[in-house]
Image: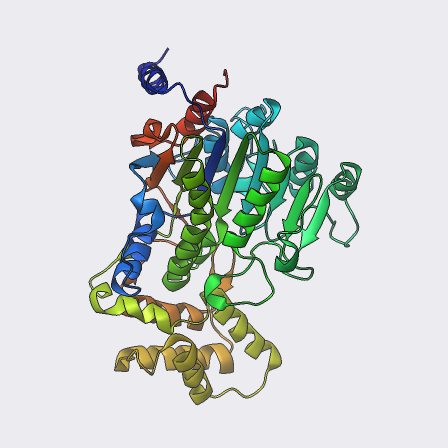
Length: 460
């Protein structure tokens, strides 16, 4: 046995010997892309702008640690390999889901708990068959095999699933896939929209955004879209359903997936608002914990860091500028693309008015002479000459004008980014409740599943 495994086993034994009590209720919260930089930005905004009397809820948890995230194939992981690592306890190659590097299926801790009689709920603010949720029920060599991932959920037996949508229930022509037929055969009830989130369902429940919504994101908090789901509401729905169907023991994984989307876009303001929203979703579990303190474990972590975000000197006076931002970078880019499609005459003064109303630029946020010149030149190149290249990120493409607008805004707020992709930085880990002490110190993401199994009394 490797020395590291011996040390881990000894630590597990010591903690478990000190407490014969095992939790009945386990909550794992995953802030996708939520490295320490974004958390620090959200905490700074909470303290300096919101004047919060207490830190963010996760920052009050008694156990705080770090977690390494590298995959079997690279020092910088993707969400599939990271999700597989902390859901199963096995490292794998980037892009693979629920399999080891040799494409052998590995069980998630959720599957093991379900087999032992626990209820299971999996929820996210992005697609319910995306990498992180899929890592808890699917086994595929490539994370975009959505029909196979959805079929795996149908076969899993899990009581609850929620997200923006499911990408594998229809083919390219809109026809139902085998996965859709499996949902019907398994008697899974699919409900949509916030008005149906708390509707009781006797059997298995899937909660999705309203019909016609994008399946990959419920929407950004900062965009204030009406009639769509929110992560705190999803968390409430999941908890209510498991309390009704599996009141004695249950496991919940809730992902704040659109934190990652905002960070890929280098949209610091949207990322901060998503982390605050994620914090509100954690409060749902924490309220439950306060009623069941000796039976509940809450773990909060991230699958990886995205964007390499940091606070700069400008944040001293600028972080409050977030409150002038009323649209995400993605929403702004969509607006710009609509202008290009319409081919109507759109003047520079029109754009300045939009920027003033929706981002504070040319209003409360001063735009310097050189910045103004760059923006004006890019506006002309984008909307008149139509001669600019897009910035391509994992989830969206942004024209050069939108990229420059948000560079200026980020600088005014005090945000800096090193990449539009993932970074190899370690991520924070927080825990409270029964067995929380096991997560102290410097962790590896594969330790999470192993420790949950040990705390729950599962043999491995």
